[in-house]
Length: 246
Length: 334
Image (cartoon, rainbow over all chains, first blue to last red; front, top):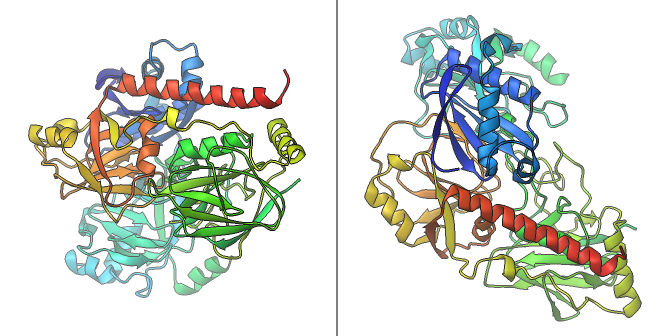
């Protein structure tokens, strides 16, 4: 596949480029928006329900959907095109002729309990100070809106969520922390997210959820996926401990 | 029959790996798997295994293990040579090792990693449909961690027709190994320090001088390199377009340019998404070469087209399937 090509998918102008011999990326735009996310989520679901021979998996991101495939199976298929990437692009283009994709996307609604106690949210006062709010107002604003999961990235199960109240916007730390505990809920710029496992990280940590965001023993290890709708519920330390014991 | 070894010394880093974990990328679970997929697959083929079976990835030499049972082994890669009964064992051949023997890995200055296959594959639980170890999150492989002194590893049942026939023949004739060998050299380019690349989507974000530097200047491997990425030292890249790239999917082989203009070749354990602009990706057939690069090694990049990279990939797969057929034909009457 040579260079990028322009097509329409569900009426959207997209460009498609090869990422490797085993993957192509469909770029739906270059600016984050709920509308774009809806289209990507819907097209992803539609593709997974109507896979081509050799499709392995897909990775939705802010403005792109990347499709991984087995080149040998694709070559052996009846799809049109000389090269594998041609065949895949051709298939995606044909699939993209389907209209009204946005209405076919199904979103999960997930409520995530968070304990905002100081011990769990060492940076909540930084977020409050940056935005001239009280700690209680930070919690109130963080729990009063519905967030959209834009994508899962960074480490297994880490959900990047948009839709946060602009009055909570706080830049990430200049020097990342060496260890952020699993379950930590953080803010970086206009996004909020949850660390599924202990890792280094630069987000401002405002609380912690007792839920396992990623568990290899579940059939879907990641609790969240791209397109999910999330709300946070404030819980006290006792309730946190009850959850954690379960 | 199950075979068993115990680790006497694991060396710098020894982990269980296979062909990788591709079905959970959307949950940000990395591909992982053997860094040098070619060596991993050849080691498996040499004992009659399917390519998917798990091998042990050893980093450099300075490792040793004890045969707790008779073993049918094979290894491939440039990180070490196996020594058994004071003899250097040839790579890419099935090796029959007697119970009680101690097998050592001794220095091979050419590369970084070898893959040790056993008939039946190393038996560890599947995690998300793969036996590969992902150390950052501590799952997969042997208890989600590197192998340690005293670990006992068993093979799955070596019931494959070819494995059984190889073992049978070596035992009957009292041989350590047969006279045939897979030629890994014939699959690799003559110059293993020239890495073929396909220019990437953000190529025009860099100024022309930088692109020329990338394709003509040498780069050396930095000490920070690991299973996540190969960090390079050399001429830094200058951005012509300075906009931010919104995080999007990446994959092993992608060459990212960091904020300081340095190049990083993403490797097996890389994150599934990244926000650094990409200048190129390593042709899949040359990624095994990157897996054998040691700190201080000097490489150059040479450009090929995406179509050419795909053609090379399909040719390589064809050659690999011929090897499997050839080995089967040696042992099984059809």
